[in-house]
Structures are given as structure tokens and as C-alpha cells.
Length: 203
Image: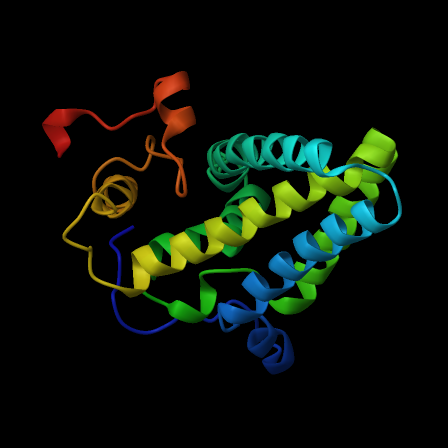
């Protein structure tokens, strides 16, 4: 679909649901940063990890998020719209962003969904990794917050005239030239590893 740089799509007929589908970026970013800080603080003060192990677990969690970001974007948000149900799912969760990439109120999940995701991540990490969960979760959710911030900055502001411009260029390739590649947003690492970097001919 051709991107529209003004306006916003209506996703729901119900006015309450429609209003809840919009958010200011500070809310989800704040929720994930708070989750990261609280998880790290709780793990340290309750003896689940020491300073050295906390740093290591934080970095592992942060690294894990870079792949989660890539995988969710590529395999879930760009799921082939082979059925009406899939088409509806794909448009609601991501297609609307490709149609209205400059809609600042839909560059992140609404607060209600963000709280649910943060809570779900805690239970998954706690059940899967036990006491390591607090350090891993802090890195993972901090990575999530940074992804949201970077994604918002890319769409809301002009590209900077320094090394940070690579993020703007990479994501623009995905939106405007090759939507089947360049799935990394806050990092291009997995695009390099898996082979989904945009071709230079389309740059």
C-alpha cells in the first residue's frame, strides 16, 4: 500500500477501543523502563544476583531482545495475509503502521497492552529462568524501551547528520523500498546475520 504521511486510520468502530488504540510514546517507554529498573532493583536487594551477575544477565537479556525484535517484526508482523483473518490481524497490528508511518500515536502499543505484555514477560521469564529472571528481564525490557524510543525518533524526526543516520536509512528502506528486508529497527545485527539487509541497488 502507498504510505500516507497525514492522518490516521480508524481501526475500531467502538469509540472507546479506537481511543485506546492511540498513545503518547512516553507511556509505553516509561512502563518498560520502570519494569527494567524495578526488576534489577528487586533482584539485587533480595539476593537473587550480585552486581557482576546482574550486569551479565542484563546484557544477555538485552542481546536476546535484539533477536526478539527482529523475529516478531519479520515472522509475526509480516505474516502472509493468506486468509481474511490473517489480513485483518496483519493490518491491525502492523499494516496500519506501513499505511500511516507518520502517525505518532500508533508507533507503540497502548498502555493497557504494554502493562499486559510487561506482566506476561515477567511470568514467562520467572517460570523459565527462575532467579535469573530479574536480570534477564531488566535487560530485555530495557531493550524494548530503547526500541520504542528509536522507532519513534525515526518516524517523528528528520535524520541526524551523524553516524545515527544509519538507523533512519535502514528503516526507510523497509518502509519505502523493500518491505521484505530490513526488519531490525534498533539494531541491524540480525539483518546482517540472517541475510535480510537491503540491497545496495535500492538505496
